[in-house]
Structures are given as C-alpha cells and as structure tokens.
Image (cartoon, rainbow, N blue to C red; front, side, top):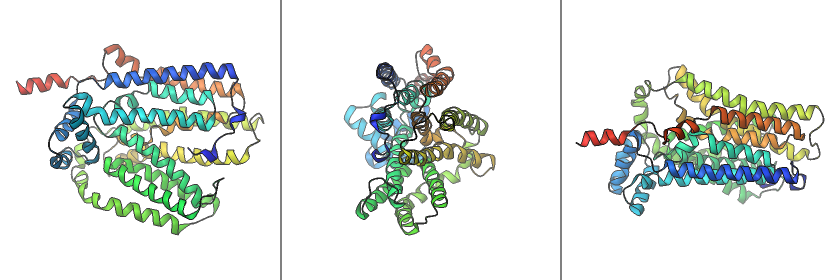
Length: 402
C-alpha cells in the first residue's frame, strides 16, 4: 500500500464521533487478537511442530538436513534455531519467529490500511479479520513457516506495486532510474527469500505475473527489458534451491491422502464472494448511483490497480493449487499452501469499502463482512475448548518415550 495512492485525508469517510467509536472497537479487537496469539503460543506442540523443534534444537550444521527430512526448506528453521539459542528449549521459543511475524502482520496491515484509506469501517474490517480468522491466529502461534510467508508476502507485494508503478510510469511521484532499479532488485530478492522460507510462497509471484500481463494488455505498454531483468535476477537467486526441493516432486503422492480440492474451492468461493464481490458490488453501485466521491479520479485509478493486484494475490494461490489437484499434476490442495494470499482478502475489502461514498452503502457492506466473519469463525469454538489445538501430541510423545 503506497503513499502516493492514498486517499485525501481531508475527505475522511466517517463522521468524527462515529469514526472514533469504531476505531476504538477496532483497537480492542486487535488487542484481544494479540492475547489470542500469545495464549495459543503456549499450547503443546503438535506433530509438525515436533519436527520443527527436533530440527532446530540440534547444531546449526544439522538444521538444513533435518528440515529437508520433513519436506521443508531450511530458512524458517534457522530462525527457530536462533530463537531456541536465545530462549532455551520451550514451545514458546520454537514458536517465537511465527509469533513475531504474526504480530508484525497485524500491525503493518491495520496501520497501512488506515493510513491509506482514513476510513474507520476499513480499519474495522481488517481488525475483525485478525481477531476472528482462525488460520491467522493459528499460524501466528505455530512453529511452522506460514506466518512468516504471510508477512514476507505482504512486504514483497507492497514493494512490487511500487516498482511496477514506476516501470509503467504511472506513479504520481515519479521515481528515477536508480529508485526503480532498487525496487526491482528488492522485489526479486524478497521473492527468493519467500521461496526459501516455503516454496508455496511462490504462488504470489504467479499472481503478480498475471497482474503484470493484464496491466500490459490494458495499458498497451510492454516494458520487457525492465520486467525481464527483475525476473532473471529472481530466477538466478532461486535456481540453487530448485534442486534442493526436488524431493517434493519425488514424494508428491505423500500429500494425496490429505489433499482436499473441494474444501479449498469452497473456501476460495466463499472468501471471494464475501471479501471481494460484496464490497466491489457496493462500490460499483455507489458509483452508478452517482453518490460516490468522483473528485479524485487519479486516486480512484490508483485504487483500481491496487484492487486488481489484491484480487490476483488473493485468488490465484488457491485457484492454482485447486487446479493442480483436480488435474492430477500435484496433490497440494491444502489450505495452508495458499496462505500467502489469505491476507489479501480483507485488504481488498477494506480498500473497496473506503471508496464507497455513501455512509449507508459502506456500513451495509461492512456489517455483512463483519457479520460473516463472526458467524463462520472457529475461534469461539476453540476458546470453549480452552486451546487452539485439538490434538494432544504431548501425551503421544510421553507414551512413546515411556
């Protein structure tokens, strides 16, 4: 989310009193969300996390090999190793990298959304998402790389959007050649880091590629030299790791028992309907009825580009793993493998809602999204159980060691 595409803060979308009340509600949601994550980080380790603890508790020279034994790339495990060296062998230490990434994700998204939109309703949408979305709570307290992928994906997508605006010369504030080169290198380096954290993070790069192709066709501009240079840098950085993860293809049948394309498709369809189509429908309806704010057409154009990127970022990862599964190429239709796109859904909803000029339409859209989030959330269920994990692997390990 970039500053030059920000909405004019003088046209804040909510009344002063109403805005203040909603902002405080959103802040309370975020504070409770922090408590949920911190509490969940103290739960017992489940099976996959036992592997992380085993890989990270050894010497640093053994981390990469042990990560590979569990079908993982090593970068996240080095972070867990460092946390254990600092905090000792405990569930909290091995989960600390995920907890830090999960909390940073909350802070960056909420502050970024409000800075860009100056809209209390938008802030409420993302705050409720971080409070009630079970997956984001779980992954922020899980000793696996998925919270780190979400955070790095957010940072990489933000830099990518800045870079691509410069490449197509559509930034409000012109970037010089040196800045564009730096942004392109940062885009490529972060993409490679995401790959080494977990290869499924590269689904974001596929989404960005689709966005770039669409932008080229719409604008009839083809800056191939700039695009290919960044792509080549990224490929060169990733190439050494391709052989390292060749084991994934060799063991691809291992995932067929847990791959569930129907579940992935259902979740994708539901999130697309609620988080993308509903706010987009109200946004377009508001514009059609001539009640929206038409005074900032350049800002609206910038938001249109951002919404297009967010839609690709949100939809493509799940759609791709679904397609690979149903075609039989690779059985990876597991929700966590598309986690890099999860945070794009509420960001899309927040940005779209901010462009609804009518208070009535905006709050109807907001209530629908927040109400759906509350109704479908699994968080209350796990709170009633007293734990965000339902598998007692601590007892299993005790029995094995007995």
